Length: 303
Image (cartoon, rainbow, N blue to C red; front, side, top):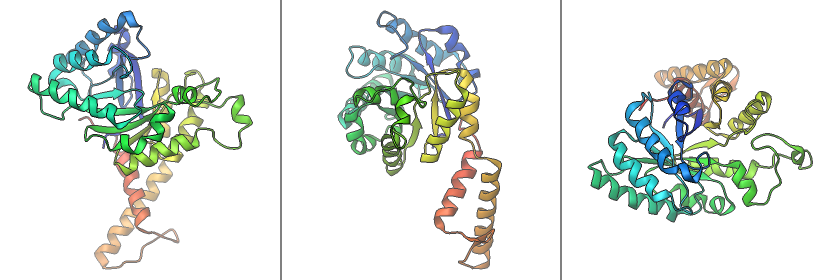
């Protein structure tokens, strides 16, 4: 599973910003063909995606966000980019996924394009954004729709609009959070994490729109990590450092994980089934959590 603490969105229509993507420090960055690109710039933006995949040193998976299936742009986003990028393309982010049939449609088209281009079938992987009430209601079927799927991504802004939830600040607390007795997005966020884990997928939280609000960003990251998310979207390079920090294990976590794994290995070698660390009994769940922590500390994959 890829390490994706920070996922930076870069407008595909802005070549200077595209060029800076690889040096952002984000674990993943994607070129956006959807919300960040005006209708009259879609065609040129696709060309920038292909150029970036073929010319830039990504040092990680090449990645772009297509337009949603409810638009007239999406099929060209697939055909033109996949055919011209060829072996260089790794991931496509699919916005506003509402039903498994959306991913079935993409899977079928991708199979045809891959075959026509001489690519390995199934090479191009997908991430699905959950941004509507219908998407959340169908999330289990979406999570198991295709073997191409790698992650579920929460879109808090569009989700709030879909359920008619008043919101003045995407990703951070606003006046409406003061009247609700709890975290207003808790159900949606935890539902996404549960569906992702049940299908062995990554779970990525949505962005904080105010890129100047460092305190709000940190708190939003902590909430997402506490719920089990693997990482968070960034809409500005200045957010990457904080996101990477929060979604990385702390020294205390690493110390605990090392103790648990070492105690487990020593107990196994001694033929003992009883394990205790710092006066607390350690069970199988603790060992899994400790190994997850150590795996995350190894850093992002480059393949």
